[in-house]
Structures are given as structure tokens and as C-alpha cells.
Image 1 (cartoon, helix red, strand yellow):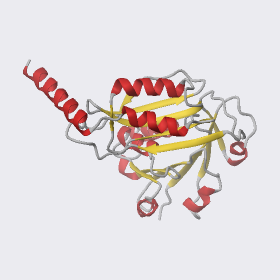
Image 2 (spheres, one colour):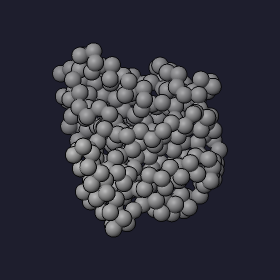
Image 3 (cartoon, rainbow, N blue to C red):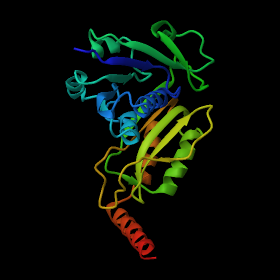
Image 4 (cartoon, rainbow, N blue to C red):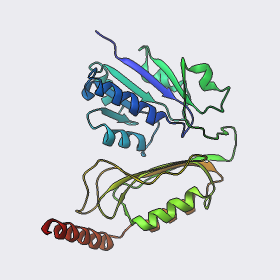
Length: 265
């Protein structure tokens, strides 16, 4: 039996773990060394908010992707895999990987900011990859991680833009890292990403079918890490961005009429 090549990637939030893994997988597939079906990606510790798994699945649809709660399915595919990437969230203990991989050998990679000189990641990893130049202070007792699933909800884009601006500018606490996937009223699914100290990026449309018929059944949700977060206000403001059933139906009808008119031109 040929053992799969298992790479475990760890590091602070926002350093670029998912981006690094995506690039490595794309390099493998473009080089013809592996087909997507023989590559696995697993992101444990995501709870009900598997943002990285959803993004990976949209960007690389041939890759088998798994998150928390899908451990049994992941194990079933290990025997047929050639390459496996496991991304450890920054909030997980590094020792958690031993329960996941068991006796399988693995290579430990840490994606770290250049300003970080000594950490538990340095002593754990066999290879250090220089990631984003982020600011981290993991010992700050006022730091917390807040997550919320929003599957089935659709947000109005202008309201989402305003909410994201307020969130990342400190209206609800000092945010170090925030990422989210939301369905918006025109049917698109968008990825939002913020890292303190890094230039903000525009919303990125995921390569997923547009949903213009009722409420989407695919995942959406948000993850925020920061200092003195006003979690109740974040949650309420986000809910205020969501469309009611009647507003959603009207918006979807308007988009469909617009698309039909464009098709007739």
C-alpha cells in the first residue's frame, strides 16, 4: 500500500495558510502529477462555519474537501488519496494533529509572518514559509473568536458593504482577522477577507451557480477574531442586512427580468 503524502499546515490567522495550500494544489494539478480526485483537503475545528472548506471547494471543485463533522468520510478517502493537506486553524492546539493522522507520517509546515521570530509554530514545523506581514498578539486575554452560520440567508449588497466597512474599521471592537462567505441578492456567493495591517481587498465572487430561486441551501457564514468584540451588536447588524422572504422574492424577480432583457438584446 502506498502511503499518501500528508502535509499539515499551521500558523496564525491571516498569515496565508489557505492561499499557500491552494497554490500548491494548483501547481500539482497543472503539472499533471495528480488529478483532483486523488487530492484531499481537511480543515478541522471549523464547527458549523466551514469557510475555508467552502472556498476551497469552489476554487478547486475536483479536490475532495472535508471539515469538522466529516472525519469518517475523510478517513474513507485516505486510502485512495495520493496527496493530503490538513489546515489547522490558529485556535487549535498543534497536538490535535496526532488524533487526526494517527500513525501516518506527515510533514509539518508553518506559514508565519516575517516579524514573528520565536513561537510554538517554529519549534513544531519542519519548514517555515514566510506569509503575510500581519500583527499578532495571541497572549492578549481580551482576544476572542466569534462565528455565526448564515446558511439560507441572503444579504443586500450595499448593506453588506457598509457592515463590512464598520466591522473592519473598529465599530464593534478591534478586529485582527475576519472572513466570511455570503449569498447576496443578485444570486452570487461572495468571499470576504480582512487581515489587520494588510490592504483591504474587494469582495471575491466564488465560482458557484447563481441562486435566483428561493433561499440558497449552500453554506454561508462569518468568522471574526479580535479584541473586545461586541458580538451581540455584530450579530444583530448582520441580521439587519438579511432580506425578508418578500424582499428576496422581489429582488430575485428583478434580477431575472434584467437577465431576460439582456438576453433579448
